[in-house]
Figure 1 (tube, one colour):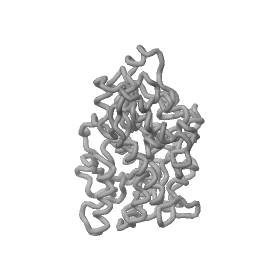
Figure 2: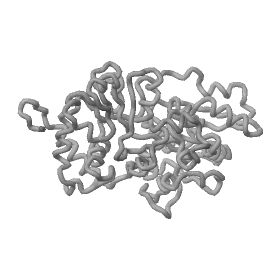
Figure 3: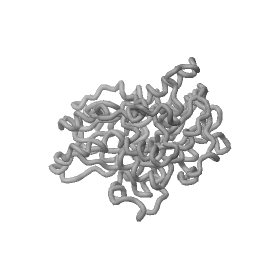
Figure 4: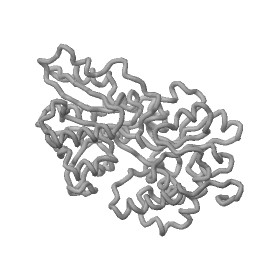
Length: 376
């Protein structure tokens, strides 16, 4: 999913404006998603270091635009718009490594690297083909993460007398033509696999009993498929439940009192935004200082609350060291059992990709015909 809410507006103060009049200070050029770096975090970074550095942050709307910039800089290494550090989603990491768009990061230069939970450290350690490798290089630094969630209309579910808690609820007859699903084979097939007790990263799909039948039944439930325009139908009540990214949904809760969100109890898909260095980038000491700053236990809770996405550091912190607003938010800080049952979407080889693509096309091409009871 693109993980960009259609409700995100322009920032009231672009972070690059914070650099005005400070050309003589050490400077770090960052390319980030819009609203990806809270201004308060930028200010604290500048205050904490001496001499006080400047962050020149240019914001982009989508992760694919940031990936395209890395490709552009590979073609033109001397490009004037090149940044020292770029935010990239974990989904894009394999391609970035294969295309030689980024360079490895040395965790030995990051005093707070050990604060990262082990599964996040493993996520960014890859071989030169972009596959997970315990002996591989570290290609990125995890910054923040979120999950695939179910957002639902509390008013509609009050009338039903129940609330959704797990993926299996998507198949309930009361929700026929009332839900939206991501326009993503990995996500939709993955959540169906979760319902069947499997991992999102399951391959050999033809060996999973009842998978095709379950997907066909779920297809009959869906009113629409969208990864970036699913919130407005939920707000208007055209759909009662939407499967989407916590990064999109959490900001929505501040303005929509009749919408609630839940992480499915059987586990979900996890995504992580990463810091990567362009392949042609020159050594800049502020790169390590910024990454290390983001990994501080003192910064992680602030980042989580302000960015509406969790710092991985908070997973290993003691509950008493976290603000109440994090402890009481099961999306920012999921139950340990749910988190353990959740999966990063790991890279597949071509054979695995083709399995998902083929099954996805087959299911999506089927015409829903309620009258025949074909999917009942």
